[in-house]
Length: 307
Image (cartoon, rainbow, N blue to C red; front, side, top):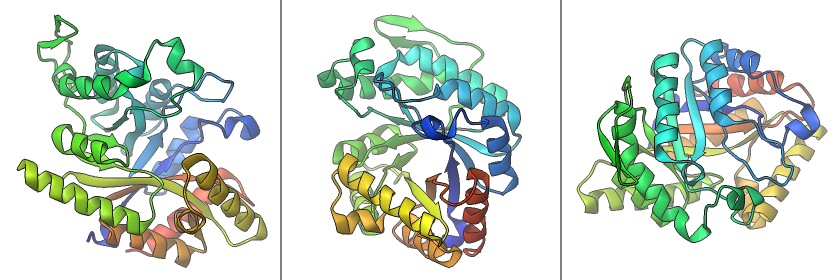
């Protein structure tokens, strides 16, 4: 059980589908707002589907966030490893570490939307994604650190080497847990109820003990809908339906996932995730009856109740 007062909270920038209705976000001012409110991290999703769904490139957004802020962590949630060569990603992360002052949290995963055009366009076969993910995880730290590293039959040495950021391995499956224990500093599941998370943390600890390795930290990703207005309730219901249709969650489970409601209700939900074993939580904030900035301020008010 983690202490709720020590739960670190990150806020995800609206750089994906939200663009269709909200327009291109001012990520620099949004990141500064998150930092000024005292959150631990600005989170950046990495998603490219190729079917017309909006998305901003995660590396470009991270560079803007690094330039616009001074202390907040910059978390990828998550970089999809099979979409590019390990050496390319390593060069990007190495550069971001230098330019941000070692503020990167590197969430990584094997990717979703297996039938999307983007996967076919980059020539990544579904059957190869787990293998490519593990191969990349095996060489990524050495490449970022500037060590001579063999990858794809060639020894590569990047410079100037950087401090390797914490690597958070995404995914809810047992395979993801094994990867987190073998390669990662943290495990990053998403869209889980507190009860699901507690069971996952138990599996994580058991897997680490069997491997004779330290238990990785736990960072869970989810969504927040601050507010008690009718518009906020509708936004929460929409989020629940999305969890049912896109993630196959049952009605009961989907209703337990959103971090929503009044400040006290949100604080209670955050505490439940901390009690389940979360060290960090990353939240995509849905504005309902206000601006995104105001919704994030409401989340900050709720987080203050944990102290």
